[in-house]
Length: 227
Ligand code: CA
Image (tube, rainbow, N blue to C red; front, side, top):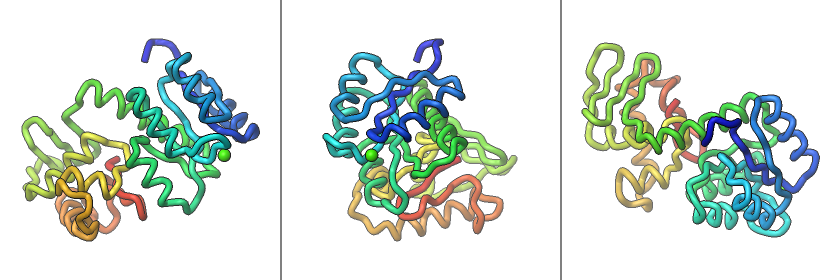
């Protein structure tokens, strides 16, 4: 990213939604470039080198998931997917193929902006390899492997720590069950029920009120997100 306004590539075949996105993003000082098909998107990606791709999964010429794989193959640009309500399977596939996040249609401007900011921040974080996380009463230092709630040290089991480490590395981003099983258990065929058990234990230790978590949020049917 340069000092100029952030450039977002909008990939969406429906003109009214494209117009809405252009207006909303423009009002928040983002620059935009548009593509109505997967083919146009790949061309725009090469010519404009956007800072982020906002991608509708239902495109006329190409499967949206296939397009994610192609974009990912070309570089690390963040991808935020626009998906339909209830299509959890497509969201999970999109995330597993390398999309950073998703926004469900119909979306509110605030939610869209929050997702875009998180995806852009996440990318910067990865470039700078930020190894600490602090929010309210929770702080995590991945270099020293220290977790604190307020002034108190939190003792985590190795699995609990490994889960938290993944969430910190990808803070703000939703991580699929498969991602966490792959990174923590080294085996994504493990029953996600194990993950639920460990996340419950983790919340007992790091959340002020584990029944209404404020740090480790559940994305139903998809995974978890650290905020
Ligand atoms: Ca569409």
